[in-house]
Image (cartoon, rainbow, N blue to C red; front, top):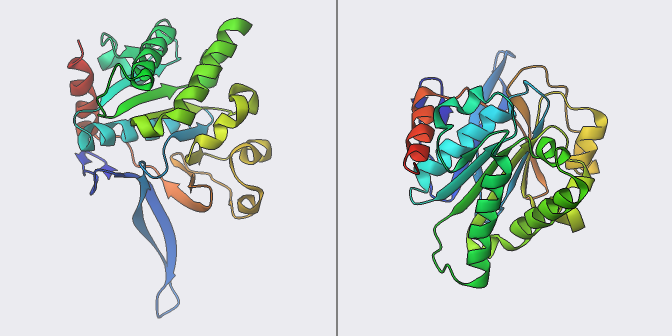
Length: 259
């Protein structure tokens, strides 16, 4: 897993560590003690990820941790990253990469990725290395578009998540609220890893978690803590570690290769 000041790689090419699961053990003398084990996401079996949380909840740290893990375990992956933020301190070292788009280049990078997806879809690209799209603040970007552009972009994302699995194409989206209006024709149901970071509202929880899981959710008070739902039925309380220097270096090196 990604720990403070170090990078520990994924143990399998198809299993991505996303955080630590905390559980309590009672010692023989009655003293409670907390233990942790890593939670792994089988992204081939359960493709596409939705990361939800308010500002400062830790969702961008989780997104960057996952990005670094994909870079490490999928060395030949072709990765595109778009962040709809006026100031991109989180990605300041890769601003010049053609595979990265900030506030001004978001649409361009998304369209470039979609064109690569279509090449896979129509058979002009028969390669099957991973084609990955990471997005930070998906809903913020959509809200900046006019109605026609918004509808087209939502439809394109729906195609990616509905048809991408067989083409080895995946999307990892981070946002504050995953309202259904931003996912057409049930596309939201195609995200098989859902992480809710921070202390979400009741409305926010109902948007992403099944009704029978909501009663299991306890208040979250620490930054970097939340709940992960894998495959629609297994839910875990997780803690996301800070981004390590070595993980940051992996991201910087990968995106500089595209320059």
